Amino acid sequence: MLKKIMEYYKNFEKITRKVLKGGLEFCFGLSSIAIIILLTYNFFFAYPIIYYIGLTLFRLSLIFGIEFIICGFITDGIKKQII
Image 1: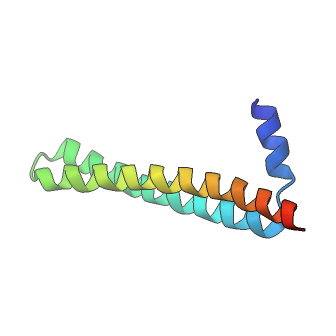
Image 2 (image 1 turned 120 degrees about the horizontal axis):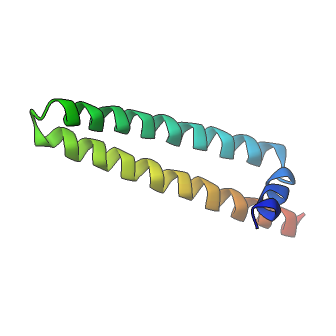
């Protein structure tokens, strides 16, 4: 299954692959910031708002990552059907 997905990814157009890679890098960066914020809350229990900000950013990064993956596959499928 994973081999099939990787083969499908290798057949993406160059621009689609570039957008997907950039989007996943953005999501990884956002996730890293969220983890740093959550670790800050873990070590310094000062304000509960820090926890909620970190948790919200982490959820947002996961949602964006999944969205970039799904939209990349859909965009590539649409481009191959039209052309």
